Image (cartoon, rainbow, N blue to C red; front, side, top):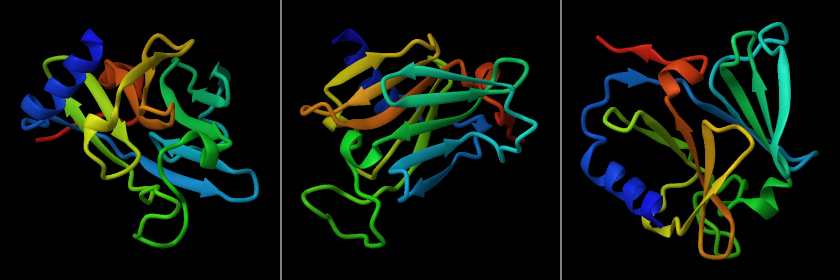
Length: 161
């Protein structure tokens, strides 16, 4: 619960000064019900290691161990958002709208999957990657991905002038 309080404080108080930019892209694949989050334009040669970091979530890394992408399998069942081509809610789920916040004080990248308020996150779930954790809502749906020390642990962090 302390980490949840800390996360809410991060987003409310410390996301004003963004010193880094991240080029996070998302892609949904209806045929496999997969949501992919890309931290770089992934080319086949960039990915050298793939790990299952928790049930249904696969992480791809480059040869330096930096996070390149995350694949969320059975995404329509696991996430708190929908992937239809509409901005309206569908079955009580908001549309996918990937956005991020970076906190310099805690060195944490928070990738939100919708435009919902961070207050819907009620639980933080750890993964097998110590730098990646998941923000879950009250009914256990994935709402956010947290990356610790993203400047050194993701592929695309770049300092802004």
